[in-house]
Length: 121
Image (cartoon, rainbow, N blue to C red; front, side, top):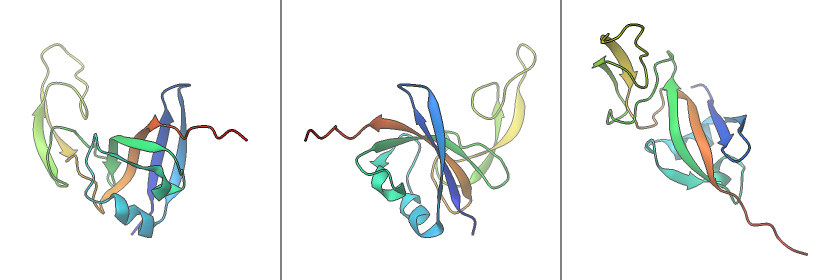
């Protein structure tokens, strides 16, 4: 089983950092969905609160927030996550991954929602 890469984005300054999480810690993320907020101490960022914004599976198919469950589905899309139309009115049937993190997910995108408060000495 491969490790999961977490792309941690900081909306305040627009930077992103990749954190590799081993399999034991990655299991704590299984079952979480897009939009869920979790404690950053799971991945070594104690005091931070992180929100899941997306991700992709081992074959590169993106997670979509409106597809429920961890499975892969084939949808007719006219835009949004997973398909960018080239012509006006274009629709295409494409594979996308559900919104739940499972063992097949290899990249998870998260953003910082809350930072630790600075301690005064």
